[in-house]
Length: 168
Length: 372
Image (cartoon, each protein chain N blue to C red):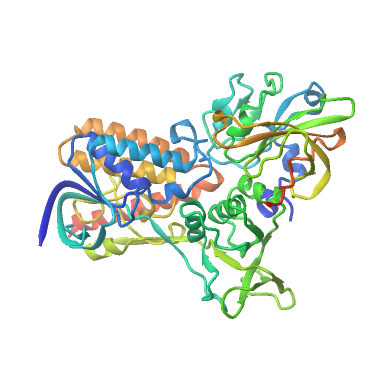
């Protein structure tokens, strides 16, 4: 059985039908939120936190968040404010060959800028090497760090986190 | 024996008890909150994750922060809080027997709100009495309150939100989670909680159970197996995981012992964790003057518990004549609107139906009373 209910990972179909995932055209334009929220749960901080109205849930707060790609600036406030840690910021224009993924991270130790890490997919399997570009941990993020990691462009729709370093 | 009188006594200083105290005190009632623990806050201080819901439910705020804010509000409200206080009994007239500062005391309150919460279910299997087998809630208390890691290598039994969240928090605390096993053919909790677990590389094995814990002095390994549609282990599918800890997240049941002592009527709702007290829309039970709120009325979650506490606090104060009827009704309407939001969607709908069933049981009971 595939799908989030059976594996904890949204299936290809679930992601294709997910109104929070940006389309290819918007991805090409650079930094944009990717809201991988595929289950109807009562939750809408992504909508409240976005000052550009780029994510809407609506009156019925169990509705899936809808991304309005044209309004999204990729600021990333939603990444740390999603209680489900289901949002990343994708930037396909980081360089000629590389993209970046900004993902929420709540483990210690935090990586440092310049660290070479292992980039993992939704199932935790290592996909490719990643380079930590930026680590943001501000009070508005309430304890959630946001990590920006550069990866080869072709993995931008599969890489969603990094392998947790072993504690020493 | 010492006797203490008050307007409203609240048993339990958790999510529901604290909001009930705030509402009742705001209305001008004299309020006494009792809790057997050293610290108030109930389960809130164990909840280090960000809550769901909307802005008005404090979504995006971590549970312990909500707990701190509630405590501050209670302190400012002037409600009296007795900690380290065991409520050992309740009479049908709702007077409470308590041990406070080593003294046996009877509390006579005009209204009593019971907000005692819930306790974890246990699951028996060979080896389940070995040290190293514990409730997920116990493990959560150890890591988040006492800062002690219960084990290094964990097998979690149960994939409801408790199993998923505690697994995540055990990893944050430095443990390794080898697997989450789930007897049902699907994951019980939110997909986004499961997603965090999967990104950390932890398998969630649905249609699996723990068949035995292996060890002499403590857990040294855990055997799991696949189960068929009737939850029977399928021979030949066993595998042994080198775990030192088994955490059980196999549901909760309401802590109703005190309520049973009063003779209040119960109804049986499995989705709420078993026998739950009948109550009306004011949270009043079949015993006049006895109110309930939070998980003791049926296991839900912290945000709903806080709202139910408000309902009980408002209603108890209203019945003392401290809030005009119209105002109380309006304020309850507001709370119920927020509750209905929490009780919606694929996961909340069942709880909304269970609550309806509970209220209907009360109506039926009252109708019968009117006839006789």
